Amino acid sequence: MIRRRSTPWIHKWSRPLIGAIAGLGILNTGYLTFEKLTGGSPVCTTPEKVKGCADVLSSPWGTVFGQPLALFGLLAYIGMFVLALAPLALKSGEKDGNKNRKQIENLTWWLLLVGAIAMSVFSAYLMYVLAFKLQALCWYCIASALFALSMLTLTILGRDWEDVGQILFTGVIVVMVTLIGTLGVYSGMNPDGTRGSADGPQQIAAFVPKEKPNPEFGWEITTTSGESEIALAEHLVKAGAKEYVAYWCPHCHDQKLLFGKEAYQIISDNIAVECAPESPKGKPDLCQAAKIQGFPSWIINGKTYSGVQDLEELANMTGYTGSRNFKYFR
Figure 1 (cartoon, rainbow, N blue to C red):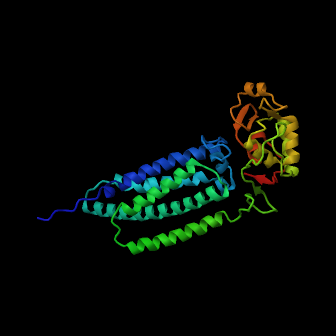
Figure 2 (cartoon, rainbow, N blue to C red):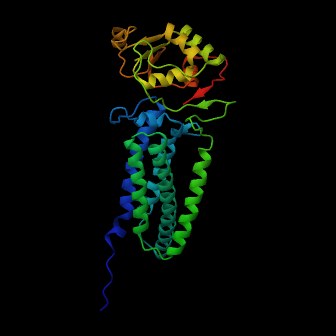
Figure 3 (cartoon, helix red, strand yellow):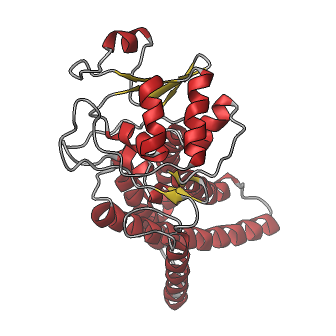
């Protein structure tokens, strides 16, 4: 009597496990995408003087093709979720049905392998950026990298691969394509953290304080304004917009850098409200009355917008119709 070899547990549970990890990735990147698109700031605990998740999301590496990087991660995890679990929903039946099911399983395994390799390589690049370029700590980013590596491990160990050489060949091709694509996407990045050329809009990196802020004005604004920034600032004053800030807030300084020194002077003199009570300009009672919970916060037409706003966004919120040749964006 010949005993059938029992199926290893990892072969039985690899797809459900990959699906579960992809589900966690969907929650992770979905939350970050929501916060980025709504101007919020993700909950993130980091040691003092260490850049956190909000700084990473607002950095040049946090945006691809004008959209949040987390959005592309969300789509990737949704794809892995579907590839992992869809074949499990197919019922065994007739001979032809079983044959089709086997073909679908085989195809989805290869797609899972390609997706897991690409996500792992891209995550490795982002970990390099996180450690050496941004020098920040983002738990969501680290979790996403671990998810990608876990899915790759389960994909490789989760079935009997008949042709190991083909796996290696596929892996090399996917790694090369992913690296070339990644470097191409970020090819316009400048050494100072900005993106773009001197002749066009530049993406600024998140501000990292290197000295204590001055209670009167925070930190010096190092960017200069163009005609469009000045025109928008004047329009915001006429539109009755209000910006609530704290002199010690790095994100508030990010907002100032987007306007530039000359334009933000108009904001500061007319519609900026300092909320820190220890500042000579502090008006904490006004901030409490406005129910401000984070900085910077904009109140435009009675609606509160939290977080740093691109000038294009402010222009759209207030119906600005002037020149939009803005010099900087996040």
